[in-house]
Amino acid sequence: MSFLELAKKRYSVRSYLDKPVEKEKLLQVLEAARIAPSAVNKQPWHFIVVTDKIIKNKIAETYPRDWFKTVPAVIVVCGDHSKSWKRNDGKDHCDIDVAIAIDHMTLAATDLGLGTCWVCAFDAKQCHKALELPENLEVVALLPIGYPADTAPESKKRMELSEIVSWEKY
Image (cartoon, rainbow, N blue to C red; front, side, top):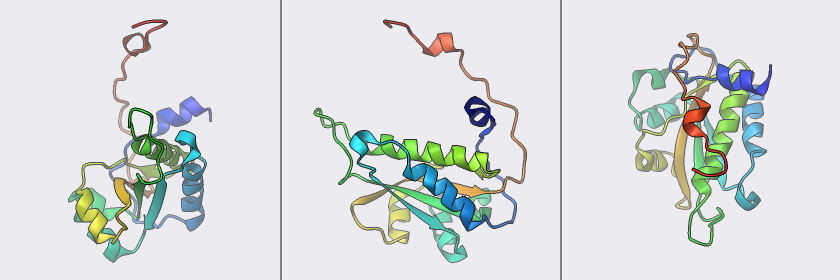
């Protein structure tokens, strides 16, 4: 499958089979994140893989959606602002670097027949506390991962290239 076919195949999965994800597949997804590029190669990320039901329930309290309670695994994606590269004007690239790693994971998961859903609308402070994280880590996103119980919905309309691309000047 070409890269564009893979990218078009990926969608936000919100319904999962009651089937654990093999550790080998989780490791492949995490390897995709590990090799992701980052500003000045700082790699300001940390990933916490949660499969334990008690811990998953604590995380689910930070994002109270019924579907989220059924996921077989969650990758808690953290950024470390103490490690990230900052541009001369102070722009911190931590969130950008972490986003690249997450995108690598979502595509790797799709390639392995798994589904994901990039979750950002959660209580980050509560999640941080529930996982007893050190102060230098910020929970940036939750990435539920598992075998999809549904099929991809009809593709959402995407803007035409002419609407989002300029050549030489705006």
